[in-house]
Image (cartoon, rainbow, N blue to C red; front, side, top):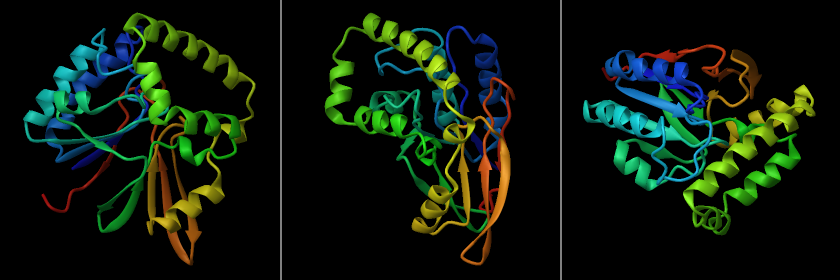
Length: 233
């Protein structure tokens, strides 16, 4: 069994979601051969030196899962893109690039967080490009932890009000971008999160029926998981 989740947005002020996730790691995840977390595991990540709650507990639980033999893969999202190698070493998770292709039930499947699919949001895409640069990240990570934590809280508030001003189509994926990326990576299935609009979208691409799976966020669908059979089991 291969499991896919995303957009848990774990944080100190969302203990219920943390409890759901810990229960998942100790039960259903233990029955899987692989777990894929497609971004925004945390509501904010200000650096691998942050062990404030619930980060320390989540690290321990992930390490116990990977030590049990379950492979855990993690894509970074728009909220936790500063997750780095120290976190990976401490938990045993395998970090994935923004796009990853796997074979799933005989189909080439493209995995991504989903923010890159929202290409109509030009302002966000410009910020994303800047914030993924080595210089920008080193500048942020050089600041004291307390300052980074304060900045993250301010950014979440600012982001909330900015979203209220954006139209629905800007906040959703661009279908042309979806099709272009699926063609580029030669995939017939796409799995992503980010938009918080869970659904299965089927459409034709190059004369073939293809599918796009949108993962739910755990705030509105606590504990929701997308599951596929592992033919190697």
